[in-house]
Length: 181
Ligand SMILES: CC(C)(COP(=O)(O)OP(=O)(O)OC[C@H]1O[C@@H](n2cnc3c(N)ncnc32)[C@H](O)[C@@H]1OP(=O)(O)O)[C@@H](O)C(=O)NCCC(=O)NCCS
Image 1 (cartoon, rainbow, N blue to C red):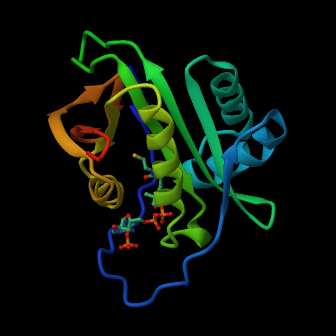
Image 2: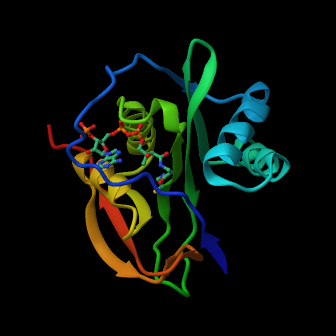
């Protein structure tokens, strides 16, 4: 089983100081972005750039999948995916569109970039389905706050979802529906 191996941001619900929000350009990634995104992933999440490049390339080529980047002055500072995943019978994760992994470069955090990347993916999914799913380690409090703020509610907790095991504990399966007009 795959492990969710992440370096979580320190949990700071009320930081003493903040950088100004930044205007990042969010767009669908292309093949040209892959080396830059692989570098971002390897610096922030570990693993080799080659493995990340293969993974990102596969995501770009998959059907029913979205790969987006956030750039500031042409530099990739954020990366995120969304994809349709089939039901995972072993851990009970239903079939549906999932947000899969959002990463923001440490120097650019807390400036609204993940919020932007997540809203963009939610809109993309709502053009296709009425539910957006994601799963997050219970220890990743920064990510839980980010997603709850955007309307996600806990559906259940478990040791793994979609075959991804949570390092040292359990994770939450969350879902959001489009706002009612
Ligand atoms: C989690 C992560 C993507 C957030 O990116 P970000 O661009 O800094 O997030 P944003 O600036 O858009 O923050 C939006 C909201 O999320 C919450 N949040 C983000 N980082 C937080 C932190 N370190 N502590 C507490 N809350 C946090 C806050 O509610 C924040 O709103 P506020 O700044 O108005 O208080 C980033 O820290 C990261 O890349 N972490 C490592 C990878 C990871 O854990 N990805 C998520 C996998 S599920």
